[in-house]
Image (cartoon, rainbow, N blue to C red):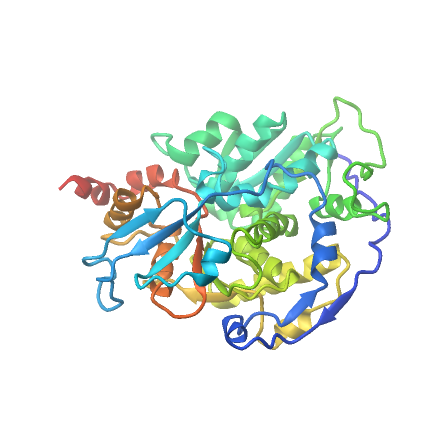
Amino acid sequence: MRLKMMPRNGVLSTLTFSCRIHCRGSVRNCIQGALELSVHNEEFVSKLLNRKWALRSAATQIHQIMVSNQYREQGDAFDNVSFVNIQQPSLGKSLVAENHCQPSFYVVRDDLLHPLVNGNKARKLDALLPLLQHNSVTDVVTCGGCQSAHAAAVAVSCAERGLKSHLLLRGEQPETLTGYNLISTMYGNVRYVPRSLYAKREEMLAMHANKVAGSDGSIVSLGELLDASFSNQGFDEQSVQVATRSYAESEKKVVIINEGAGDVVGLLGAIRLVEYLSQEHLFGRNQALKIIVDAGTGTTAIGLGLGAVCLGLPWKVTAVMLADTIEGYRQKEKSLISEFCVSFNLPDIDPLLSKGRGVVHWVERSLPRKFGKVLKGEVEKCQRIARDTGVLVDPVYTLAAWELGMRFSREEGAKAVMLHTGGTLGMFGLAQRYRSYFQMLNE
């Protein structure tokens, strides 16, 4: 097996970079805790996003959820509460003038982007998939849990583009294939990995990539591909020439994607989404917003936060922690932002992060628990939301963001906006594990 690395062909031309303190009264309070830092926005973001994308458009539906006035934070927040979904809410200039006495929050319906590849999975693959195609990658190796939405998204996306996916799933094969596990098996090459081996993810992925590449193939670093795509030839997607060597048609070219696509390239799709949402006919650039997202790896939240910073928006990103400690998420944030700065030739902003400031406000879910565990009554909450609004959330991920949206809906000032990160096919796997909870739905 030969390891071929893509050369770093220069760096970007110097970008104007400046720091400034936001002094806009109430807007300043809204972004407290976020980086008080702004890249000269229009030019930088325009160049950053001038590339090919997997999604034809960054567009997504936006709904407004009205919460009944009976909602109270004391006790069970769902007692006697009801919801109404306004599918074509007033946005743009009407958003600023809006003054509902009834609490409400907005939902960005990224769960509707694709029947199988939706939510933040589609956003994290948005910039990555064209990069793989442009560099003639033949095989992709990644990993995830048995019901990993990420693994299924990679499998489907690769199959749609003629790439082969190799999925390492943690644990044992279920007796009945269903949900994302079934989708992964239908579209990709699945191998179940013992938990002891899965605990050493980097070593596990590297070993399997070597097997896939074989003696004549090669493993190409995703980071090197990204760096090379931003060579001194500029950002023009038509002129960028990344590959400097020719590969035989029969030769395998393998790329490893980390668990949950928690790589710097995964940030770009979230930044593209922020630019879309900041258009004047939607949320605009002057309205203070509280963006809410559930956090698995935390990559999506960090991408949203960077997008708001890059565009100088008065938006505060709040992420509900689901799979790690606050120290773990802060370290992930620091690491990804540092890599982002290196990849796109920005000054090091680690000193600002070390002072306790960042682009994301990390919070605990209302009832903390071990990742993946469902509590009694949560499936019924998802059922209530689905019946009232037609929006399907799941008890592991998106219910936590919905509950925070309910809480923020009663607060004055900034509008609350929840990003629906998809993942609803995971309900099938949960129905296997928590059979009694789902059987109670018809009682």
